[in-house]
Image (cartoon, rainbow, N blue to C red):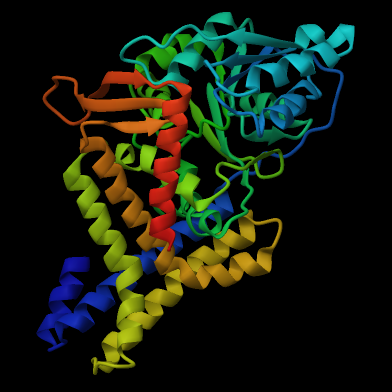
Length: 443
């Protein structure tokens, strides 16, 4: 249909700029429609009242490596859950900061009747072929006793009703895995420009309402900040051992649940979970570089195609609109380009209104810079590709990972074939070098 419309426009004598901008506008209008439907159908996980009801044993599992700034708030919020029976397991993955000491202090300060609620585990040395977080989660699952396993990240904070609300929703909808988007807390300008693209990408491309209704694994997504499995199903799909060498383990586990014939639900946990993923543009650059190429399955074709589409759909209309001030352009092309820019900004505005609690005026103003956000994302993707193909590999939390083909015929199988853990002085030096490069980019 779109190709027929393009050919019709050419037959009527429209110039290529008009055809291009008109096509971009049509695609963005379709994405806007998808976003509106998703916003109307995206279920919000609501707090539930404490009632006298029998609840299943829940294990909350927290992998932690060098999480000194945030681990205390996370652990305290989990211990304070209005849920019984509950255990909170924190696994220290060879941290070099005070993560272990902070968790132990919290345990020591608990009343005697609550000390059994929180346990601190010490991770084993990372074996070859594993990503650190995946191995930490694997060990946590081995120690867990619950009928439900709730994995969460150490940079999250949870409302007291979170656990009860998650289990209630899983039982109400009859699902085997519930995953959810938290409220993203943002501080620096880099965070405010880039992190909202997480919701933008999911809600403009993935039909949320079909996730629990259709069996196709492609209609699945996962978020490691909240992944709650029925324990039997987690083990049936192989758990984190099945994705031990993969960076996007949360998405892949969600797809594995569907591929095995089980049910998945993706919800909005804005009222129950908040997360400060990164605290500077340098951290955003590094964190997104770790995963972004993996999102395209390490396929240079898919990644370069995504770069082209993002540039054409979101950056080019703004460039054409601005260039019209200096270079003569067909009036219809300028009109289409400006409308396309307004549509993309409108999508960002709708997401801001739904998912922003504080400093909403500032976030709405930054919606006007959406093309710049997309351009930054394109640069991060290029950096992610550069890391992937470098001999040194990718540095994340003191470990270098090198990913290569696993010997399969397709790009669908990539694995860690080399991992080198660096010592603390080298880790600090590598971090300083990476921060210096990021500061140069900002300047």
